[in-house]
Length: 453
Image (cartoon, rainbow, N blue to C red):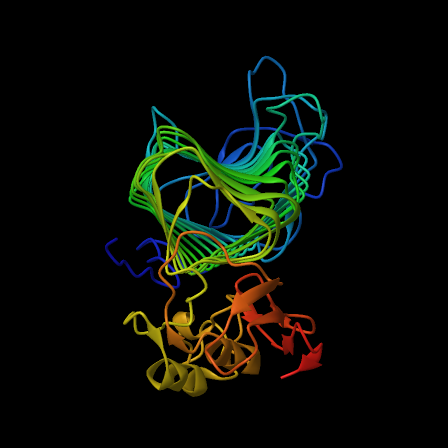
């Protein structure tokens, strides 16, 4: 993934300066389709052609006569639209072909635009970007666009990006939209950073035919799914949290995507045909179901922490599961390398002082801190704490080479050396730990004399 920095603000047009534009306050404003900005106030249906800062809400916008779409504002190339926290409101009439802010079209592509600090609500699409390049959407709130219907898909979007490239979607709040929070399709080089997506009707984030993009630091909560992907490949995910939904799904033909330090609640499902995806240092939780359902080939899972799962990992295909820590059942078909050894930070197949040192150095750190080290946060909960140091102590020694999980409790007879009781009973009563992280407390009892040895 190539790196690309984006400026805090894009250059102003040579003929314009920072302008405060008074917007319409009409209760039901008529869409009029004129150019605005500069000395010309913006109203429903206008095209913003110079840098513009709103000073009041726009709308609610009403449908004009004899047109097939409703647009709050269109934004032209080389424009910064700053709503300064004011709203662009639609009619909230459950009709489609309504756009709160529209950037670009097939017949009029747009380049170099910033839309920031806008509240957009009551349309079918909140913010829509298509056939465009170098667009930044930052610090906006897109909410209650479309309508929620538990039985009807396709009922409205918060932000939709289509057929575009070099797009930055940064720190937006996208909530309570009818269908999808953020929909990105047929686009490349899209950066999706630090957005909050919550309680949109179906998927919080939907990526279809998206390539060479980076998705980092987002939090998605609720809905029927947190993440949906189709035909999306060569994308890098990191530090995202997918919370409070039953399913995260790489559905069809998603290849060579990487996931680093992700948190998945519900089931992460990788479907047949999605090949060679890698998940590293990630945390899984699903107390009432399967945490990870793998149906694809070439999946590589490095040091996962299955925090609480009815079934940790199910697979129908070949998969590499390296140094997992899990609670709950594990599919017998899974090939497991060095289970319960995720504290092997340096990868030498032994847990010891060399692995404790980076944990000590990172104590108290969280992502973004100068001392943060994702490998030192061995339980992947987002903070390096003494609990991570304790895990290193529990796992001290050579990494076990086996492909089946050990039992958390044992009670069996074993042979002992000559001169000692013939058989002894080992009990793990009182042992502590989670999944493979078990600190065994053993007692040895002479079966003949019933005395503790």
